[in-house]
Amino acid sequence: MLNGKVAIVTGAAQGLGRSFCDILLQNGARVALLDVNEVLGKEVKDDFEKKYGPDKTQFIKCDVSKDEDFKDGFQKTVEKFSGVDIVCNNAGIVDEKNWEKTISINLAGVVRGTYLALDCMKKENGGRGGVIVNVASLAGLGPLPPAPIYTATKHGVMGFSRAMAAVSELTGAGVRINILCPSFVSTDLLSTFHQEEKTGQFFCLKDLSASLLEKYGVLEPAVVAKGLFLLVTDESKNGEVLLISRERAAFVVFPKGTGELPCVPVSL
Image (cartoon, rainbow, N blue to C red; front, top):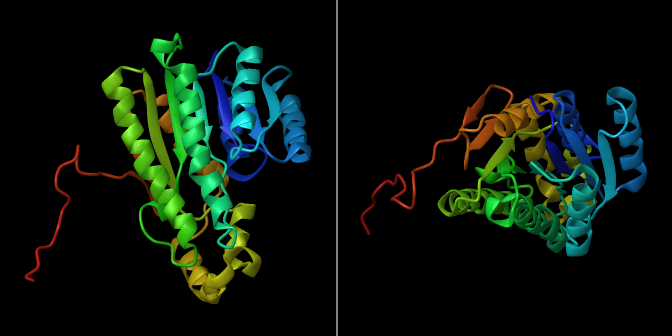
């Protein structure tokens, strides 16, 4: 289904990113694996080469908080595969102590990746169109008290991505932009919610984190990857938010345009 398509995935060396790469490769795409972890990234590339054959993947060391790294990632992908059709901005961390780093990776990294993808893919620049999927979280739809900065970044990913999807449609860029919102996923990121060095002053809410995990359950990365595949392949989807939890997968319905939000009136 994706034969001839070229994808870039950030945070590709493990967890969700690895599963995203896997499902894209399964369906015929060639994939550039971008990750800051060079050792693990090369190991994953080798594994994919054994599974899917040579010349299907490329590993590029990339810190998404650095403009030059990200630009280099796109440039090397285009040089090797002659274009880009799919971009998944997936790289993310939980670090409430180093909150500026969290914002730089989780939100600014998505902004950088989206702008670079549009410059590369939009038709007015000679691109062939395509699709961007930005990974938010259930924390992008409601507050996650043990991680306020993480919550803020995922809300930012939601708002930015929805606005840019409208921009792309209004300007005829030919690039769809969708948002993936999984609940808790069985990855290394999950353990950081229980680490004082990562949660800082909010470590006192570790019991709440545990109760939320029990309430919402933990998804396997391969399940979330199916959601990515849907957003990539369904060409009717632009500006959509796909929520995936243990109980269901569903598109979130927002009021159209800039109209009034549903409200409950009060007397002041």
